[in-house]
Length: 497
Image (cartoon, rainbow, N blue to C red; front, top):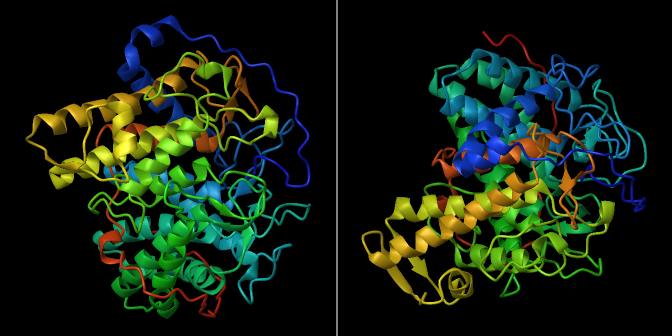
């Protein structure tokens, strides 16, 4: 992603950051930490959004800056992917909250900024054929970044469509169809057309290091196409490319499962394929009313749980900070075990994602009123409870209570790791070192803060609306590497009144 230039793998010199933990934060326990850190995280996000963000002077209105850090490393840019993930968090918070007008203004400014960014010609291509939508990052003053980079990256348009559809649906529920059609649909339509046209072409993964096919990208694209169908229909529009391509994207998604884990990238990168990419994917495509469906890799599915175990276990023995931890104990988690960027360390967002998937699963089991242990998921559950056995357990059973309690404790353990290595001021960098947990790399990383908020919300049972996973989980009998060429129209944003 923005985390490393794919042409440069030299280790960077970490900035000195205090790792002292405020004693009251320790004494308040995990609940107290989450409560106080959630406020810090929300403000940390807002500080990194122009034009009023205190940490990012010079950023245009609505532009989400990855980090205030301008050197070692320089993340003072806006990434389509990270900005979309961040705004989806703010949109969900706005919808679930009290309708804070200041938060809505930030959302609307982001959409206006995207209308300006989307048609800009850049090194990934032009707007006329949509290829330019695959450009991963831009300058904070809404101009093209023309330096060397890992491009194109094809997850951004899908994630942006998902964020805008969420806000668009909220406006539709308030009777503002005209505003949605004029200000939101043109941007979303371009992004959906891009996904339908380019989904089966390779690109760089979310870490911006590997060129190939990425599980994270394909999963995000499937979701965007599915919810795009319903969104278009609600506006009296159509998305023929969404309808024709969504099943084929889902078909391809199955290819990443090898029977024991997700192979996160199809590329010759000399890696095992185990990558937090896959857990990030599971929480991104979480649907609160979906079943524990393997085909869409829902958080409570057997595939997603066994993959969670495989990814977490890959870090147990390689980090010094994990010394003394047993199987079934939460540990510090990084991107992928072969990582060398900045020394190859745990990431705050990786630990938060590991927790969030389990909170998602707990929500889904509660919603369904039962928990099923399959042959696939059994190893995951036996790590937490050696007496776990294959079967279906009603929510009224003692076994259900015991198992879900163990899963909740395990999930909380990953948040406790974050608490242990969070400085006393609550700031969240990109990483903390594998030897002693000192914060390292980009400071006040926007994605770290966004990840904290989503993990906290899921722990509290606050979930987004369904995106339709249960109506789009049938895998075609034969996969086709198809596409649907779309048209692209320059968007503009008028009044939000």
